[in-house]
Length: 325
Length: 104
Image (cartoon, rainbow over all chains, first blue to last red; front, side):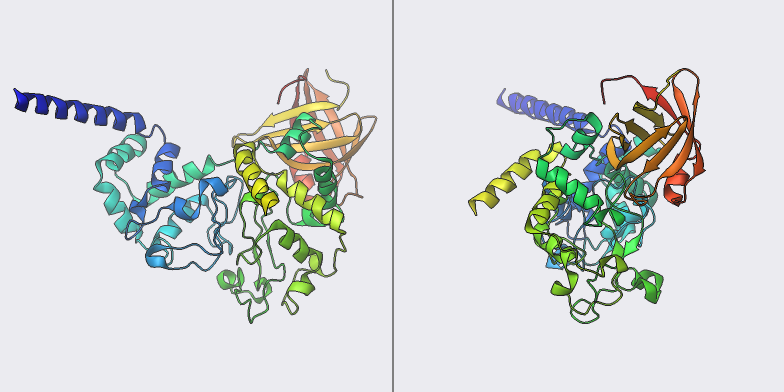
């Protein structure tokens, strides 16, 4: 009798587990992409996932200067936010990928990141019933490089944010949505600060590459876009990052050299003061902006107003920590 | 048929993106893409001609568009003169439907 009770109990556990599995079965390609994004199976030693370097609470970016890959290896550049990429036309700091699908699988193979040949990743997925069934259902076939890339990119396309205080102010004419300081900052952003010349459009970025002066060929030697195009005119140029949720994505720039937005604003205010002998710096940054301390604060307030409401709690906590310190 | 550009206008594009234009009585205007603030600027209306400026093109320069109202609730922007290529490309022949007040 005891034996039958045990078998009955086991049967019940299996049934519960199965129903839990069915509930979590991805219903569409984006949900499958989400599962993959958070799954460590896509790294050589199964120690990291895409989400290890693109953490949700930091707007899918990383707080380290450069992220840590498998076996403790360090990346070469700061991990950008994986959000708001739907309208983007180049990916990675040097723009080496032209589509989100192309971008999605590159970190899997990168030796400093997940270090797993895509063929091996696909073989792993094929061997897992969960993925095998999901790919069959959603793509009508086994996992392969192409549908793996599509699934990951479909998930990334869901990471759009359009509910920031700034959007509320402008779209709904809600004057209370942002502070007076942020409103002044918006004016500075569009005027004296010159920021809008590079950061414009729905995500406050631009399809161009620019050299903001963080290349001197010595201590700052990442040639950026030029390494891809082999064009000397592209020396030190990098993709222009989105400013949406920028309050959460520190440290900043391709090399993560600025820890705070204040440091970023100080840099743009007078680049020569921070990097004296930059090469090929954009003419837009040829003269100091001569911002007052109040104007710098206003610009920072504006940048904070680009934080989506889904992150407002994180921002409040961050502010409280800052106040305590 | 609407007799003023003041208000909210919207267009859904075949690729799924949605553009919204807001023209206010204080002569400020905003453009949104998928609910995201895209650009903010100023405008002037003279008869059926719209003069438009924004900081991405040069806040001091006004591009000129003729407005052709059609159907009961739609408008077409036709460039008369705009040297700002990006804006010209986006606005010329753009058709928008009028949104009723209230709501995002």
